[in-house]
Image (cartoon, rainbow, N blue to C red):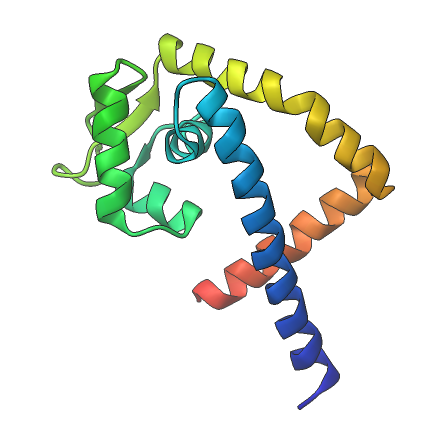
Amino acid sequence: MTDLVRDYRLLIADVYELAGLSRRISEREAAGQGTTVARWHVLSTVSEEPLAVPAIARRLGQVRQAVQRVADDLTEAGQLRAEPNPAHRRSPLYAITPEGSRLLERLWDVSESRRRDVLDDSGVTPDELRQARDTLRRLSTALSS
């Protein structure tokens, strides 16, 4: 096995570990705000632009059916709204509503100081985070093609 492949496999294991740790912390924070981490993640994913359920599911690494249930719950709660999708008539785009934005802001607010403390303790710089994100996105693009 080449060093490149070994290092890739170790990186992916670290990404899974980080994602799991982050998810457990987020679950506690979401529960404190009367919601779930699944709802938080869907709201966050559509916070910049409306997306269809398959795109949300891909972004979150979840199955479409699970994301559809969460999107339906958020729509019923008035935190998302379904909009026509010009690219696919039967797959609406989901956009965050003002109520959903308020919930997302509360979630981000309650988590910010803890995340800032963790980042400060880690010694990770903004440039390092941007470089890591760029690396992960390049790998994701390569794996998608």
